[in-house]
Length: 137
Image 1 (cartoon, helix red, strand yellow):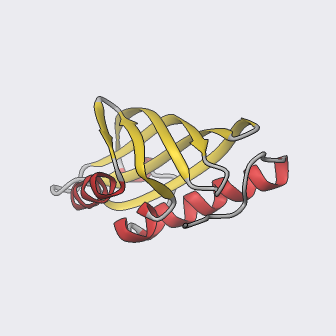
Image 2 (cartoon, rainbow, N blue to C red; image 1 turned 45 degrees about the vertical axis):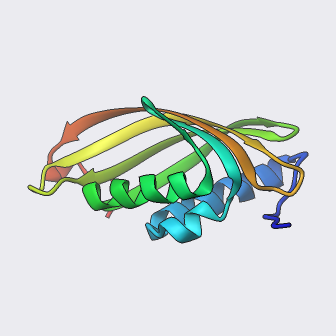
């Protein structure tokens, strides 16, 4: 059985660590690496996409990072309790013609006792930005 410490129930320290680990993994833009944090049957909602399973997560992330060039993410712990963590995030990216975007959102995460995420619910909004409005370099 796979595991991914830290394990629930979370403390402030372990919740902050889990959020930082997720941020660092997503910033690699490596679907295989990122997918290892989720259960084989993890349930996802990402905007208006609903799917489940590690293979679906990998396929989704491959398409995402093919579209979202120069992706850079910042996650912030919002709250936590027992086996759940909520985060706020923002990320910047540009499309194939060089138009920059900033995406804002919230995620609700639920974990198994082994520290793998079994549910991820993400609400995300996008806005166009100019190159000189970027925060992340």
